[in-house]
Length: 387
Image 1 (tube, one colour):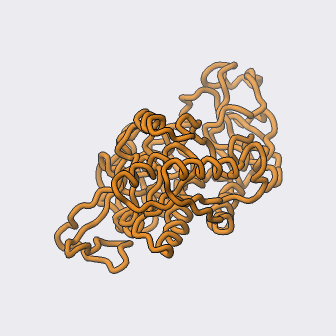
Image 2 (cartoon, helix red, strand yellow; image 1 turned 120 degrees about the vertical axis):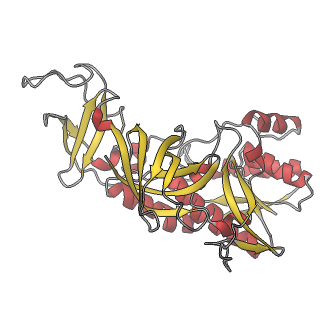
Image 3 (spheres, helix red, strand yellow; image 1 turned 180 degrees about the horizontal axis):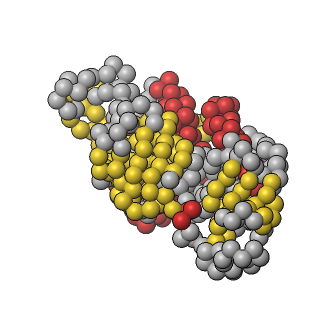
């Protein structure tokens, strides 16, 4: 059993739980970023030291593996392409699919491991295959035959609703789930912290990491400036009035409120006061790439920020096939409450549409729309537009 040790408390407790269950556990620390890795914002050296200290306490071996080349090619390059196209990608979703459950899994299998484990708050359930469901040879698209029993694997939400990470894992397939364990998925975060303190783990009180791993806690615009050239253009309101100048559409996302550089603007053309009043906060509502124009509105409840439908493509379904059209729930961003929706017909290909029972706020192209049937994460795709 190879456990991904990040230096954080979740993966540390995962390793301890598996060893206590009798697994022969080896820890593996993944280095996924090389550039300015010694900075105050993104230092894997500190995390590796923490992971090594954890391995020493638990009594397991620790291997250090550098996946930065794979990360730059498979994750960061796509991240930049999406931002340059004016969309807002979620690199953590791609990192899980391409690095943590592909490059890492492949490496673990080469070491002779049968399974990998991570500290994600999610669960995997093995269930009997439906009658007539074809049995795939590689486990990626259909049910697999294990011990003479036809089975398939479901990805479930973590039991701690405040920490559930199934949203970030929705692109995992049957072959990956068949080899994966999520030991802390059955626990609440408070219990994980308690266990870590009880067994004397040195990182028991370590703060949870936030943000994208290669950006860390640094200002996002400062980081993006190094890779994407500024392309200034007008900021306009719903009446077409120019309120200011943006520095480049890549540096803004729908629903953004901070960093716009505009305050309350009085109506100078007799067109009626903007929604929410002259001094209500401004939000990014649309990005017109062709005209290099950033459109903003006043008030969080402005109609331009509300969407009852969305379109998505690049779909990835956990079971290997699209769910039947019908009633489900979905998230259009992490930490959002499940929203009742209808999966429309046409989901059999790479594209699908969702229609929501209630308007959704700031549905953002480039982010993931993830579909749920109760506690089961079915998969999802990349949002291309909304209405």
